[in-house]
Length: 388
Image (cartoon, rainbow, N blue to C red; front, side, top):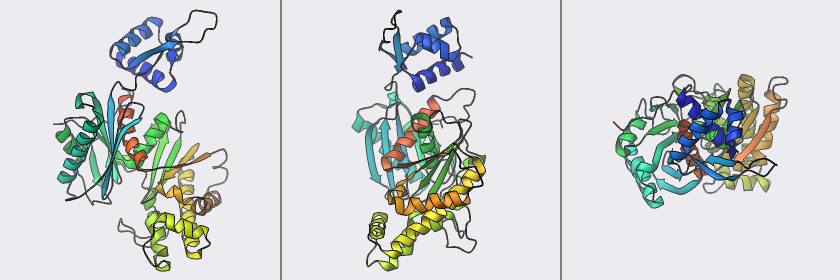
């Protein structure tokens, strides 16, 4: 009970501060004495700070309290097929140092775990933060990830199966390590610090190299069995469609992700192109480029309509590198979404488009650790993977 009350006060300060002790008492429902004792403990442990006095309203001015963002530091890693991005942040996920490193050499689990650990050590050294001030390391990557056990059940890029990656990294660092699907790390960060704050039911769809989904139901990230929720990119939309990297045909990802767009226009350009090149060509009236983006948008909307029909979220956040394609892709997506959503389910749903870069992915992985630090003891299911 003591741990739950401490967590309650800390989360109220984190999410709504600065607050006075009186406000904390009103918001928490705890007694004045209990709040006073918990606040004193949190001040002594440097989890919170006193930050001046409240505005004068005729009564006694009260000292305001807020989260101490430097009560510890966290590290976030996004693992991609040929690169790793790393962010060192404070407890408000303000990025203090950012690295973008190539992933060279062997892609075996042992080799990758050692590389990730070395990148963390290097990033902390550059930032001047010692490991005893680090609360944990978060790692995000694509695939079916069981965060509770720290196991990669399937990685589409590395073709790993049942790899205990979190434990392997923890043994190198002697730090707590959390593992999660990369889209889930973004979803957690949106819930803690972004547009999903105080929204009970929302989804995050990302588009880019792949297509992913994060789902929050009743204020809780929904992971499903073995962390398998969110493989939106692998719902089948055309039974005899193009071959997907997963080995099946007609997946949303094979029809609408960035590589699908680039593949459909490659014969119309003299040299290899990027997504930005395709967008610029579409803006100039290049018919093949415009058709490719339009087709991608149509299938993205079809997939997103399935999400709305299944989960009926109050908020949809559309993000990822592929958002940079702009209206040529997004307008057809929204049109298709409206066309294929069941009657009335889209009414009143807020849709936000949030462009994102690689640093946001790393910050999301850092947010994974912050989320675990502030998680209630009642719902805490995922423990950090120990170093031994």
